[in-house]
Length: 273
Image (cartoon, rainbow, N blue to C red; front, side, top):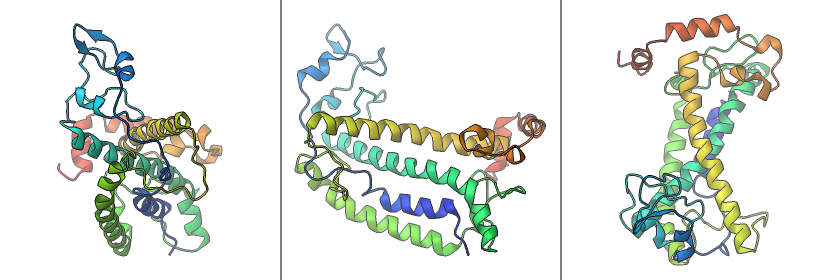
């Protein structure tokens, strides 16, 4: 059987969560924040205001460490202390890396899974594939997860559990060595720069792309659940689709009208209504 491209890439994403896209052990240390970081923020009275949410005060715990991508966003003050702050940063980096791989895997599966399956005379695991072999990626809202072999899920859960257990033990040591959470020394091609400013710049770019990817993958899921149109066909200019591979505007409008009651629609999709 030709494995679903989503399944394969999501498996890779799960494995890569703790190891890929990370810097070598010579990375920029996690330094205590200096007064210059606070000077970048506006202040009202004696309160330093958040750069990202200017009408809210900055959580002072964020100033305990100088982390890449820090724009003072913690409106609920979830980072209660240094340990919690570093734990959340480690979780953010892992989710960012996973989301980047997942967003890529989502569109790759919709474009190629059906065609590869047809070429190998194997089952197509996409949902509602069209004549061109393009369909919806299996997801909680799209359905189709039950068609993915149970062995895949067992493999993913097993590998994820093993890796998370291993890296949960490694992370405290990483921070103790003065490295940022998520830095597991993975740089097989020696791409990591030696200059500290360049290192921080790359970390910031990774986080920004990862944060965007987290939003994108959620948007993919809800957009397809409502429209029932693959994202690669809703934005054909981005994926080089031919006119025959585009869904008619009338069908999109019909689906949108039928799902106008969004709450009822999603309750139905989650099998709660």
